[in-house]
Image (cartoon, rainbow, N blue to C red; front, top):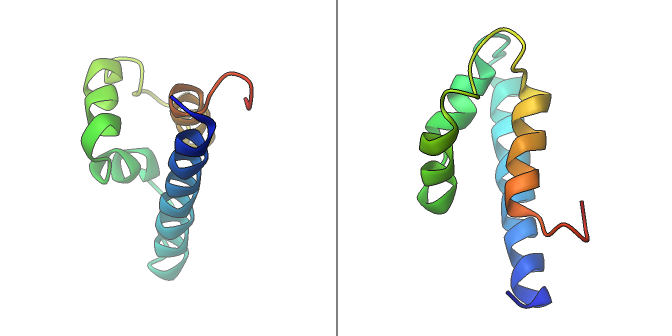
Length: 80
């Protein structure tokens, strides 16, 4: 994948993350955020979620850990 495509992908992901975070603030979501994040995944990210679903559960799996795993999958290693 070319650098320009990676940049578009990363921008799209970060735009999506910011949109969901704004929604959490507006509707005062404090619990089960990871479940909501996963609900809104589409396309390749949703396929990734379905293969990772056993790792994406439990009390130790926080929003921060979810975003870390998501970025690790969809960001090139040179940018991580």
